[in-house]
Amino acid sequence: MKLIFTLMFTFFSLFQSDLESLRNSYSKANSSNENAKNFIALAEKKSSNDPVISAYKSASKILEAKVTTEKNKRKTFVKSGATTLESLIASNPNNAELRVIRMSVQENIPKIVGYHKNLKEDKTFLINNYSKQNADLKSYIKQFAGQSKTMTASEKASFK
Image (cartoon, rainbow, N blue to C red; front, side, top):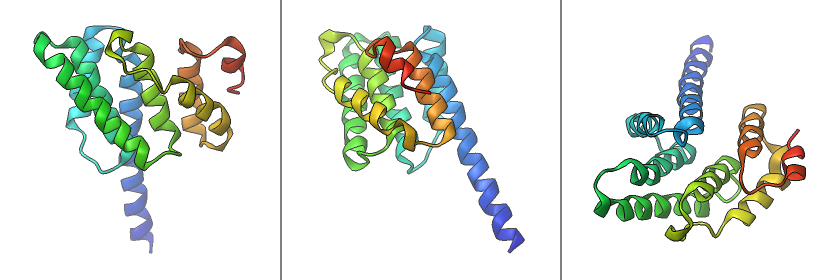
């Protein structure tokens, strides 16, 4: 019995550290090309069926369009990442972290790309479902909301 608990704890710890490292790297990715490249490299190393990790991998594809030197590949990166991210959210509509990822992508992608239609929907979802999240995700959402371009000051203050 102790062996089973030890194995489960070890697996959970490894998963958490993967997720935590992705979160930390993603939160810094938009601040510089070097940070973006570091996040992309980290995300590419991850292999999991978990929708959250897959969403970070999708975000890394979209971010790759920003740092690539091959202009003809930018559209392909954005389309591939956005399609996968939308599919993940359609399959997991109540996952708050997926909504944070999509909202952050849509806030930071140039408007001319046309991938910004879910900002209000995601903002409303996060505000309405914030209290239902675990402590780590609440902290992450609060951090994201604090720097969000879409949320008003009163909306930011609602994340306690």
